[in-house]
Image 1: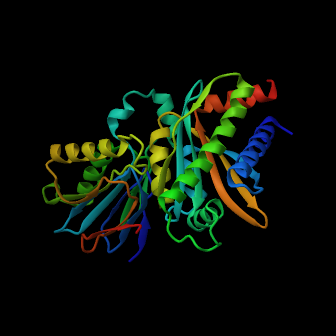
Image 2 (image 1 turned 120 degrees about the vertical axis):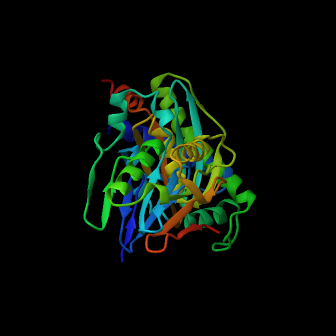
Length: 192
Length: 173
């Protein structure tokens, strides 16, 4: 198993544990694709006109960048039902409680990824407070692209599933750092 | 009549009865220019101001772009320019190309769409900078802004009818 896979596996496990404690029921977190993409190629991940919920967290410290957790609209509603313990199909509009809960998921996922990276690299990485947007995917990601096109050419794009048996909630998790920093992470992980 | 998508970093100039469409506009600024007498229109989907570019090294800029050189192509009805991410450079190119295609600069009128901050709790000046840069550049070129839908925390979609000059802005609600 290469180091990226190990990082993904460990972060997913830690996130699973934390979310299960938060929600009070078992949640499995599975990563089924992780790839590095050019920042300018992020738009087609989801249709640019699709409505999504986005949780954005700035990252500073030894590595500077950001994370972005994206839920397509219907999965944001379904996830809110599960997080806030409503009957499935209840949520049709996100309340402030729902946004808070989704932000917390972003916090937990990002925090666990950064903890694993921080441990591997033996450096301090700081995650900042999450911000939330519920809007057209292209508009959300274009702001990220505009900001990071100047600073980071590439992003690590992870397709992730949160499994509340038997329901699986699909989301996309983006980690944006400078290319050199991503390569350093992978090299350090491989011991090269 | 065709719907032509104008993606981030592109300009399309059209003389026919086409609709120029830009979607997923967040902090980006879309600038439309229109010669109402000759019915020639252009839409630029820009991302950043030129002033932000000054701090980057040339090789970093080249690495960011999918192609380091401006690509131009098209046919008699429409003209596409790629690699136009920056507001000032895009406006310069739009004016130059429209005049080449027969437009009269004195007739040109502009509309602006975008420049939002998609994360309301996040401090971000990219959108505001884009709006300001577009306004300043158009003023410098003597082109009047006749319509705008800018700022706020919302994403937008734009449809620009070259036949009529009407710009329609759609938002999520």
